Image 1 (cartoon, rainbow, N blue to C red):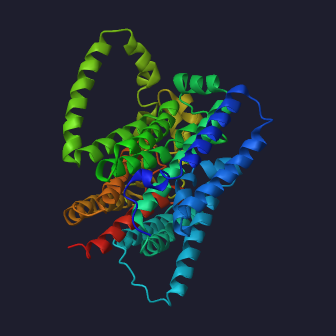
Image 2: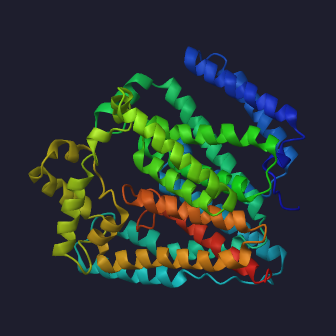
Image 3: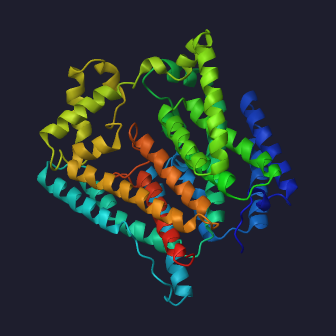
Length: 469
């Protein structure tokens, strides 16, 4: 199947699908507002019929279906099924591995093996982790963390090989659709819950309310993925004016999830990844310059009006770092005491519980702070600074390879893919300074696979660039 370079090509000739989809979404939201559940089954039936029509119209490959599910692995599927996130992630990885095995069998195992450029980093990280486990007191979850860390290099290798021959443009679109479905699930659940309580918890407390049993701060992560992908295709792909009818509502929907959660780390990640995407295109750089000028004028006007106080409440500016500065201080003191191999995997949370009560604002900190809220500090406290250095080196090497690939792919149809994964890595890196759900971390396979897939896509682009001199 030829690459899809125009976002509207998939559905432009299937207008009835868009009409049905809009009708179902509108009816679902209406039911959510009314609180009437008697018509949910008919809506569900029509949703299944619509899904069947879309599958028939698009005819996705099995790998494209798996990539559609990728943004839903956390938090949507665990929230709906009540399954443990790690089990959902492992199940998805097993399906990817089975697909790779079947594909290899069908090709008599003669497919060219692609070099995994980041395997060395994962091996070093695993060795450091194992040393930390045996040197420090073992937490009851240490063995589980060890298994999830050791298997990272295997999963990464499978991802690299399974992407061989995959239509990467369609793969990005599949993940965008998955991000949109996550946003719709969140919107429906948000409206069906008690929005007043949710907004009150966000505005006045350090705690995030649960939505479908998942902390609300996790829901914007798929939006970070979807927005970076759709913007990269829009800026560097071949987009007709009428395609923006599909692009703009999708972007607004994805962005609204981060806004509803007032997730400042997600908004910051989206903002910086968007800036990166725009500055990579000469025409959009000019638009960006004008936008910054307009923003400066608007900001100057707002400062002198009562609207500023409302914006402060919306963005929770007065809450500052929401106690993260206290947690980071404790984490840094732990690293100073145990710089080489840390305190052991999963042990930082226990230390935090005993150390935080002696800090200022300790009550809010004890209630809901299961991590260092910074991936690099989390790694440093649990397996030492060696682990942190390895993680940083991997990210630096990723950026270096992206710059090299840029020169090779800037005049090819693969450029939007390269821009998208680099922007996503930037967005994930920014969020990693405040949260640990889009990161490289031991014992967190649900979070790891996001980074692993980005690394694998870059390896696939590197392989294909050898055929595009």
